Amino acid sequence: MDSTVTTGSEENVWGGGNKPLGASYGKLMMWFFLVSDALTFSGLLAAYGFSRFKFYETWPIADQVFTHVPFFHGNFPMYYVAFMTFILIMSSVTMVLAVDAGHKMKKNAVIWYMFLTIIGGAIFVGSQGWEWATFIKGDYGAIETKGGRILQFVNSDTGERVGIADFAKTIASERVNHESKNGVWFYKGKELPSYSVNEVVEGFKANPNIAIRTEQIIQKGEGQGEKVILSRAEALKKLNNASQVVEGANLIHNEYGSRLFADFFFFITGFHGFHVTSGVVINLIIFFNVILGTYEKRGHYEMVEKVGLYWHFVDLVWVFVFTFFYLV
Image (cartoon, rainbow, N blue to C red; front, side):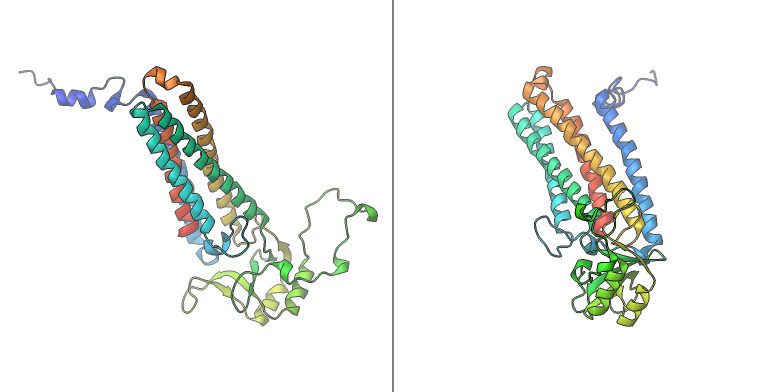
């Protein structure tokens, strides 16, 4: 008997020819792309993890950074980020339903489920854009010392963050009104913050109920895991070393704490946001093709399945980004 003869079951599994395991060329290429993209995100998140571990004692606490909700003023830690995450996960559910409807050749169901997926993706991208704008603008302000450390202001009784505008004194000699009637115009240089260091220091001295919170995290004992709040004497001593007022966050300054945190936040969430935006655009193209009956004529909805793989990938990546930046 010829020992080289293979069984039928082996041929069915491994003898796929141009379609190994029964997968089409397009689906295989999508998987290759997703694997390479997963490696990219893994490298970025690993770098974030190492940096956070190295600078753990001064790393910003997410609950004290992401506290905003559109149209509501107050301290709502993580509420809006949780809402964004829920919307994106639900869009993945509707994509599963769209793929399932495609397998059953139900054109109208595919249209509706893809429409809901696109709406969910658009809401997420818009929410992420709003979060970026809020993060960049800031609404509290802080003092940066000559050593690059950030000093935030809190209510000494409640420990809640206090905005510089709530206590800073306006010193007339500190500013020149840039109005046409004064003949003073702005030509070049960076925009001045809303208040100068002297105005903030004088306002702090005049308000004994305002305390300063540093970047340092309490390692042991009472208040472990929280930021250190200085005594009045220590706070005044720190203010003597103040260099500038910082409002919001960018790649150079960050009122929430470590500049490295802002760098990673902008790059990783921006990279993911680019993926979601691309997914929304691709979904729109496939959506209109479904309406036009393109895949009905082909006799299959494999394109919906392939774009579904990509959409599930960006949802899964967000679960890791959400965990690293907001939960851990």
